Image 1: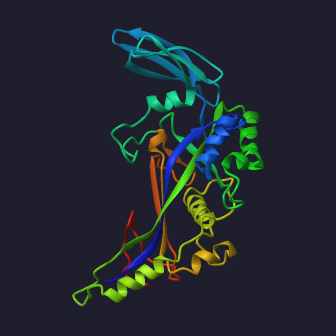
Image 2: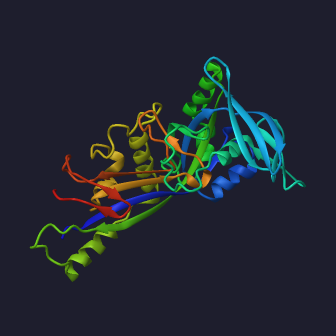
Image 3: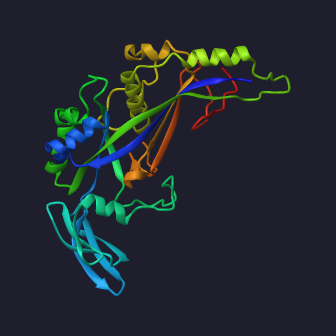
Length: 318
């Protein structure tokens, strides 16, 4: 029986916002209070409003985006008439709910709602691109630089984030920049076992106690954030990230010395954006979905065969 101790990271409570929202004290306070330390800078086509017409118990809403030649590409949606769009201005829809309740909805939230795959937990059943899909451009963190600052400071003062926004404006591509904030949870006591043959021995009290003692060697919070960031970068390989794209989890990186002094056998990552209704992809990862997972061995055997499914690892050779 072969026990493996793993560092299992997963994202929680994702938020989706525009860079200009960081100018409001209320929003930056929310980020700080809720300890959002990872940010994912993304882009997608900017969606514009054309019309909304009543059609019995339904509404016919027409939206559009512009292609590379600035031709309108129409998006038509038929939905219950309890939501009626009155107007759109400066990224905000003025809508009426149930005929009386007037509200404001951010335009990117509305397009996300129209394209949400309600019965698809992974988000991979629809193979065609959706207008709500987001391409990952850059991944960063704040915690690793200082335990005080959160992503509001990091994004506002980050030249690469500013460069992304400026490049999109200069190219006139009618795209928009959106940012996902992530919180991190860890489960560093995820273990598994594999029966190798008839001579496999049952776990003993001593072997279980050894496993418990190994698990007590925890990482600091800052190191956990760094490992999660590196895992995301290694997975998506965004063009604007240079750190960790090809190196993680190399022992040559001094910043990972703490990680390699532990007895963890692997690091596993899961990021789930279903809660905010957007599927992620990148130039490297073409499959668009809500849930992305990946596993990285932390052993010296470079050709180790692994399969990570949350808390299960297959390891037939070390």
